[in-house]
Amino acid sequence: MQLFDVVFYVFALITILSGCVVVFSKNIIYAAFSLLFTFFGVAALYVLLHADFLAVTQILIYVGGILVLLLFGVMLTNNVISVEMKTGTIQAIPALIIVAIVAGTLAGLSYSTWKGVAVPAPGGPQTTTGTLGQMLMTSYVIPFEIASVVLLVALIGAAMTARRHRNS
Amino acid sequence: MGSLGSFWNEFSAWLPHVQLAHFLIVSAILFALGIYAIATRRNAIMVLMGVELVLNAANINFIAFSRYSTDMNFDGQVAAIFVIILAAAEAAIGLAIVLNIYHRFQTVNVDEVSSLKE
Image 1 (spheres, one colour):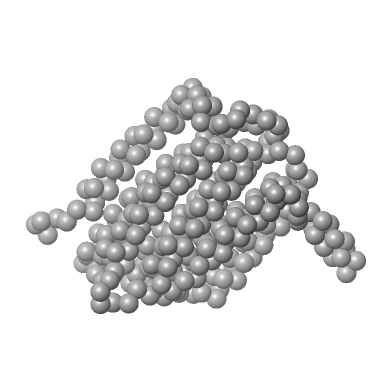
Image 2 (cartoon, rainbow over the protein chains, first blue to last red):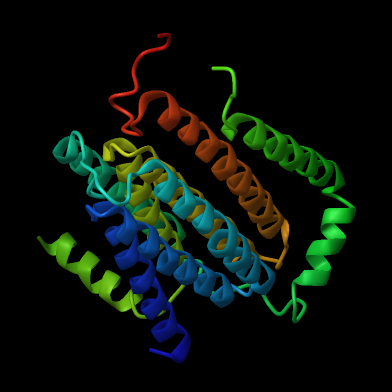
């Protein structure tokens, strides 16, 4: 095993184990903080895949934005002082069986289909940021603009939806 | 059992050398965990966390295929950027809806919020 493989297995284990804590933990605060380690592990996998810009974006947006937003949601919708923070599950056993079948099928298909693909693409530029920026401004400019409109609509919509109505 | 033994030999020889399929298998496990959270958790915020796990699994697939394609093209990474953008928008809208549900029903358990109109 080379260093690349060792690093991959370390971060894959961090990702999957903290993902299991997210899913199976009874305490929603533990789940939210375990999601932090999942996001960091996924960012490390991006670095291993030579996607440095996406790794930084992952940390900035997921950890800095989405996770904080989820924690705000937890704090605002649970009565932190009085009620316990535990949440239950419904239909856990059938869901576990079906999900195990799905995971096994996907993993087996991935292995049997793609096990021959060993050599990564040669070289490429040292950093991906410039190339990604050029692609966003040339061949992906329409989806880029639509995404900016989607973000604006989501911003306004979330602010309008979440505020309290005075007269109701 | 001979075929199973030969499969196991091949698999154990394949396992230590990280390739494309390793990333895909990690992504499959993460996807299954997210689906499990979506299907079973009662708290709506836990359901949103499951959605984030599923989106992260999809992103790992995009970037892994982009890395291991014959020429290193960046289309997968651009797709991953759009997935992240939509995940941010989804989290904001979803939490706004969850806050509204909490104000209306005093609970965020998705199995108790079942009435369309008061």
